[in-house]
Image 1 (tube, rainbow, N blue to C red):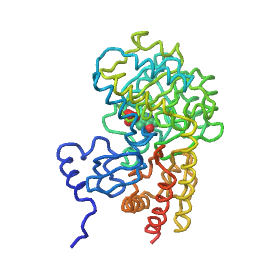
Image 2: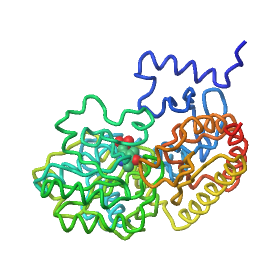
Image 3: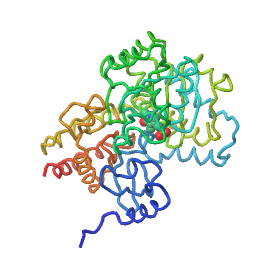
Image 4: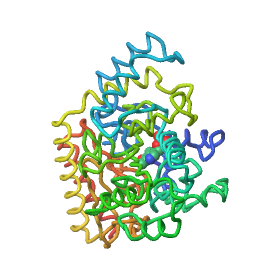
Length: 432
Ligand SMILES: *Cc1c(COP(=O)(O)O)cnc(C)c1O
């Protein structure tokens, strides 16, 4: 007789879902395909804990893929949302909440002189690209292998994480003509950008980059890389777009740009800016953003853009950011990174832990990971074994080797220590 599954309810719900939702999910990486498991169906979550349909609880490191910097369902947020919902869930007319959130964003990120709210990171990046093309009257863009900027056509070329794990670097359905305007360079390799720029002199509107890459797993920028991009963009009349959908309000309250001291022309935001509700935003220099309709001719709109519930969640989330929170996250991040590395060493499993503050990725490889090529040397089967072992011990890591682990203010040192203890056991299952 086969061993009884630990997850009968999740399996039943997933089978039902797969008959009506393609692949049983609404976003591919949720399907757990690359880790050889059935997705957990979630019933509830609170703080750093998440509960599945079979009644197991886990310390959560997915954290909705980044937005939940204050943990699941913080009390203040739930109250603010309840109060807002009583006043109405959507008006399709301006509210003061949008102006307030915009000022908060601009205060935290001074390069954002004007901002437009949208409903996802995908929308933020595709709209920023449209403005960049309008501002420069050029069509081509440079993106980096392994960086992800949402699922708009122009960006679905070597796009990391979901796409990487599935082995579909480019999606069918993206017109060849659109993909042809997307030029690829290598992350942390300025010379590769120079080469692309030289080959397309005067045709490139913008360079878009995750200033701290998170979608091929965490890969921090090498010294001078972002500064070099800034200088190159200035020299060539290209705009520099920072996609801070993950790093914004996470690497620091002012995002990666605050830490590295590089000023992008445009910034894309998402995830934390909505505090767990669907919000994205793009913004930057006033003269560029004033091209956006109705101030200017670049059309971009949204029925639920600036939605009052979403703005309320974003405001609550950004008002709660504090130096104390970032100190806590940095401490936990360092402890978790060191603990995972120790656990691997004890089991003689090759591992490289890339960490930046409260995000990290344990790459199952002996090679330092500084770009997409080196990320791909990771042993995804080993990660799958590790993942299933962690799950069985009450820890919920991201279900893909090429995703970031996210910490929140709700995680404690005890949670991290429990996670490391589980990792010691799970690593042994790889080496045996
Ligand atoms: C998640 C992500 C996006 C896309 O955001 P969605 O809200 O999923 O559309 C874009 N860029 C980066 C860097 C991301 O991590």
